[in-house]
Length: 399
Image (cartoon, rainbow, N blue to C red):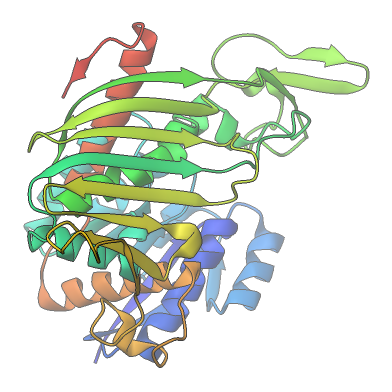
């Protein structure tokens, strides 16, 4: 079996989930390539070493550039803030390393275009790049796409997509990099809205062609904790204008991204969509919801009940018609056969393992893994169009 050494950049939340995926994929799936956890990269040497020991990495470095010349690193997995995605990914591809990059692909359309161009150039030499929209790998959502592509819903008319969280409800929560536009690119729109943009386009197999949207930042300033913002860790380093203000002994800095967004959209096949992403949805922890209505039926997926897909067949007699609950854990369902017996559900982390499985399978076959950087660019263009619409009184923005 061929072996590919992985270099992972970032050891926090996403780094931990990706580490678990790299450890697990070959243990449950028969793959053409064996992934090795070669090097973990993080700026803090002590924390990186501790994370590597805990998560099973063989070695550590403190500068991602050190990964580019290592013979034991063939894949670079980018789990860093969006402001670094383009630089790391492009350099890795030019060095002949395969790349997985966390979503959203970049902070701007221009950066995403440069990344897509670098990926296209590298692919000609058998070096591939993929963006990490892992919800595609949830078996129930993958089954949703399968049923839509089989024509089970007929003509698609409506798409309703929500991604709702509440982790920013407390106005005293500190200012982190996710709230700084220079580092994160966007707020709820880019962080979680990107997922429902991708999921809807994935399920329909169609692109969004236009949007009209609004953005809102409910808490304009937040307390700054030293070290929370990465470089410098002070409010004066924040983008978006405005200096820090003081309230007692607490230093405050401006929130320069959105807390919530809502937008309407049209798909190239004629369907209309409504989208909502918020980090202020009280009581919602990780509520990704997607509903598709067609001329012959409807499908509903809700990540808070992630092993279930609801299906309504409009062709059934009215006397017995109704939504039926499909438990998506049979061996016939996407990805499920490698795991547990029927009735034993999967969890959040399995989507990341499935991402590695698909990536390694495609690399072994010499095929472009999906979603490609081109697909990541398509999502980035929708994000930009929503921002442009919101900045221009919700005017319609064509893509």
